Amino acid sequence: MDRETAPHGLSPLDRIRRRLAEGPRREGEFNGDGRDLAPPRPPTPAAVLVPLVVREQAPSVLLTRRTDHLHHHPGQISFPGGRLEADDASPVHAALRETEEEIGLARSHVELIGALPDYLTGTGFRVTPVVGLVHPPFDLTLDAFEVAEAFEVPLAHFLDPRNHQEHSILHEGRMRRFHAMPWHGYFIWGATAGILMSLYRLLHEEA
Image 1 (cartoon, helix red, strand yellow):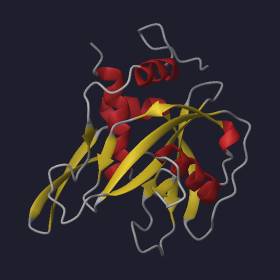
Image 2 (image 1 turned 30 degrees about the horizontal axis):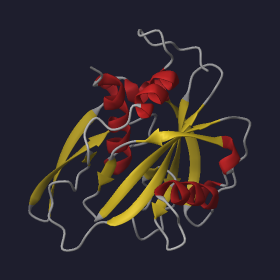
Image 3 (image 1 turned 45 degrees about the horizontal axis):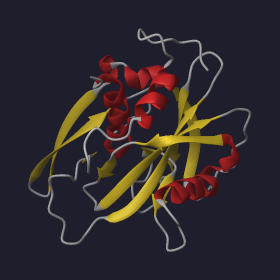
Image 4 (image 1 turned 30 degrees about the vertical axis):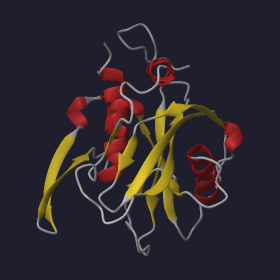
């Protein structure tokens, strides 16, 4: 698939595929900056696509930057996705639908290989990260209202612990900690970085 081969003898994408096929290590496994909070109501179901692009030289991760005028998380780096709608049959359906709506990536280019543990956000969402391999060539058509740009970051950047940061901020009287993985002027943090940390742990918590 790609020319970078892990010490285990498998490429990173092959290792991810294998680990996801094994299923969750623990029933009900989840993480996120909202996992220790007690929200006044049940979290809202949402889903994102974690698009791993199968490039000839090395795999990459497709990310988006939200437009600056949005009410929620303006200008932040994110995965394509959103809350589940009434006609969404599953988180997978929601992730693929939102991806088509936001960046115009047809689901025919996406090979679904599994899902990471649900991520609970401090804003009250339970996000299912659906992992898919994206096979070029493909064209993107961005929703100009929601998406300012789409770009790719080498997967190796997120799998290198030297690029992992942890920050804290006092929010509503509580100290909140969050991950960050900056890349070439893009500050990748919050739920996006937390989900990428789940991907990292997937490969580094093997028995």
